[in-house]
Length: 460
Image (cartoon, rainbow, N blue to C red; front, top):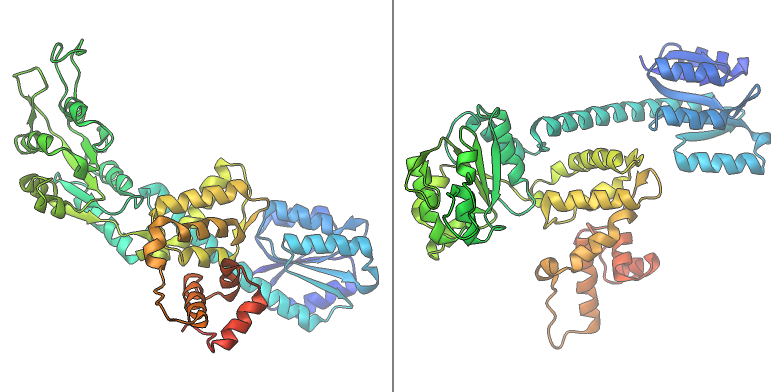
């Protein structure tokens, strides 16, 4: 049974609530603030019924102390009707804005209060479920480094489980920002080479003239500036893993040497004639279509087959939208701590807006968006307003222009053009009239009149 805390010094109220609720809930009673806070510290309270004034104690001050202990506390405040003076009204208004579940004036309608408590218990159990799911998502992220609630991402992790302890080469493909580097690290850190090193080389970030020496090393005097021997990443990764990121950008002149190293399991440093045996697991990643590069003669077909023994494709975020709420919760948890902010919850429209947005930068873009929203937030609740400017700019960016163009032909009336613009904007705004009005720079009343005029108010 859920625990209900009653904080009141009116014995009539206390006894009436005890009689009405005793068979439904586990009741806790407190006649002062100290006792009430003890209950919160030692028990899991579902709902609190709190008188605004009991004895010498101030119920609203107690409410704020309860909120410090539990930001999700569900509190119903009661107050005598005659005591609603300006100061009380001001404090109660502030408390309602900060999250009071409901506010009742006395004399109390016990049937109404019973219904409110039942609703509060429902909300409490919903919070418990959400907190559990969030904890599982965090645990999942902390264990594997990735959120995987969608079927497509769960399949990715299933593949990781199958390949982590074998030495077959893995090619990870997917758009920028989908987490290819994280998957590579998971394969290494969960596999049988986890006690050895994993080294990462970004093939697009290192000039081709330097990449060869970075991979294979060199001997003293091999070229001007080679004042001593240097081990390359193949040798440094011996017994471990070498992750070659952006492999699609490797110059074709170097691809033959990479193929030889993979096939023969030996490397020859620059300036040396003595091959060195290496035992290295190769994981590669790219956001490019290597099959097309092969057809264009920019990537060796034999190397492609060597690297692509096992392919892991990471879907873009727009194809795994069910992961967005979990990712949002994790990033809020991460950046609230990092930025010393107390973000306790998000508005439902905040999540819906994100779920309707096509993230071209994928998870990385979502993470940056959440960090920005938290950094600039003035309170402990994130709302749609915290992201709408960014989202709108995203729609206007070059990346989205092709998708958002509307065909307009010579001879079309202004009315026909206006109807097209409103309809497409409505779709982009996830069928939200208020957002449509904001994006078009018109009032809510105007958009309603336009919808009536053009005879559509549904998802047409």
